[in-house]
Image 1 (cartoon, rainbow, N blue to C red):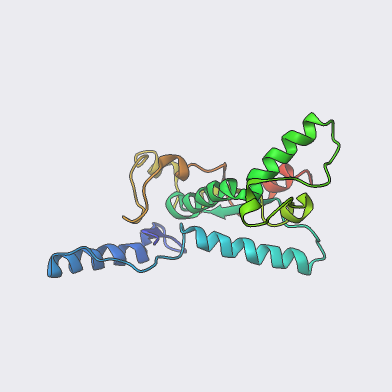
Image 2 (cartoon, rainbow, N blue to C red; image 1 turned 180 degrees about the horizontal axis):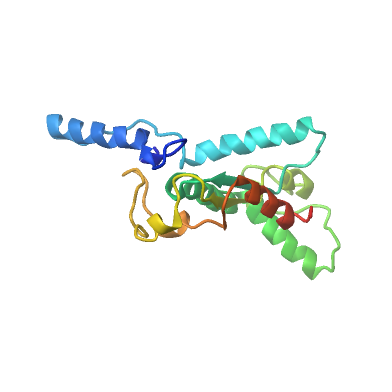
Length: 203
């Protein structure tokens, strides 16, 4: 759904999203009806990031890491696809019952001075009758996804400062300007990796 993309060209080029815009316009012009999609995948669709999380978890497991990564980092150069999708998926992660449980459990642990309860009763009882073992739930998914914007592609501060609030997204996605704001902005991927290492306490 990228309206713009960039590789070796000196300026961003029209992407697949531009083709979709043309197709929608032509279809409506010819039929008098809007083109309806059965499904749309690719960035910024949550399912794309869900797959990325699945792959990251598999890689972590193959490296001998027993627990699921707590924080995922998405590095990209396009605020309206890479960053928007990462923030959209972060919002999804925060709404997952397992992560809602984690937040409640942390509060409970603090109140009990660090004593971990044996089991936790949650709103998930409709899916897991009775008391649900906390450890079983805490290892199922990442807690957050952080978005890291790099300035080596579509995004350019000089160019984009005149485009704040302009919706480049697909018509079927509601536009939320906050979702296009990255957690972190750096010059390039190298700096992105360094910043992530620092955040995670590896430097």
